[in-house]
Image (tube, rainbow, N blue to C red; front, side):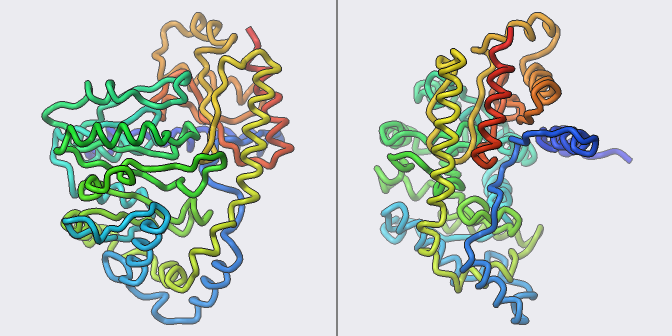
Length: 410
């Protein structure tokens, strides 16, 4: 049986491979500090769990939902974004609509399925979420990478984005707050990005805002369309409950975009998964979203403390030049290329490409320090690793201690 080129060319999730090794180590009684997680280690708020439980008693919770999602919930998501961003979709000349999908990743598949023809280019800002290039390539699009640097807090230069645009460029995707860097782009950058976009009226802008509720240092994230409302007509907002409700397994994402695009997305969805989860949608319709306002307060306190632990540990280990300030999501991207041990690996593995070297280093850290990280090459940033800040404070501090001891070795 010959598999399709779509599947043959697709990369396997690197975190799955890392976790396979972690599980084997745990089975052999070896302690591991697992810092690869892309989810928070606790349940949604109690009121939402209670609302969800009540919906179990109704027949409609087990039956098909409308293809694009329940109208009341679609309206509620629109209201949520309008309130959070201080905008009014009704002021946009072209009608804007919401479509609900089975997670924000599904929303992205629908967006690119509706937008891309073979050969269309999509600009990605590195570091980027691992699935972006694979989704684009699945739909026969071409990812075009614009790099950033650790010393710029992983914020790309607009001049570099300008250079990446060609007559084949269809869209650009930004992810702020960012996975894997744990930063969000500044107000100043967003304002300048809005001006930049006015020079490129042909571009569709996909704004992945899945981590927008998880910023733990002021100022909070802002978005380019808040500085120029005219940009909303060609903006695609991606969001969902995975991170903002700590509900990754409930698989509800949504997209707000031009009504013509959401109609096309619904066409794609109708021939793939059909409507999203009825039970969860019904619970969300009844749930007061404002109960979430203070839900993350404790989490944000811990994230601030974890950021402080990294800063102090790096300072004390003479790695201050490798540090940058995280402010959102729950990740930190370690740039190995600026650390003392790195030359040793370069010399020992001169035959390896940069993308493979980070995998070797991460594997060695797991073996010798017992700390599990995700290789940064999968996120478009070679010679690095993503570290999740989701462990409790005490084990996180222990893990950072073991990690800095390894990073300072020569």
